[in-house]
Length: 179
Image (cartoon, rainbow, N blue to C red; front, side, top):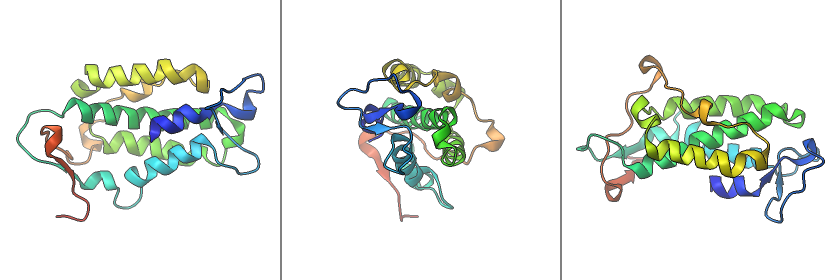
């Protein structure tokens, strides 16, 4: 979903010379309060990463392996990149002044709630996704590279208890509503 929203995004009125493609139907901001890629990105991420009891805190993995599966690291890289990209685009567009503080808090929540280690942040799956998203969408959305914001290691004292102990992807389940 995050990639679909990103594909549909474009800088909007803040870049009058920019000519969007046929797939770029969501501007960065809209003075008529129409739908924007930033607002949609925030909605999708907020369901998982915000509120008093974020859904990501209920995600459970079966115990037994010493590392996260690459697929999980890649998905979390996409979440972190998307949150950082939305926050950066909002900061750069004056039309997003009201949305910018929410997206900045959400981007920080995503980083803190996904307690990735330095090794996971430096891993080929994580870096590959972040680099790929920067290359594919950075210029198109007129945002700077997000990699520096994505690879920040959260100090252990600020991290929640480790949410996961890795298992093969086939053994992953959402523990929503379960103890």
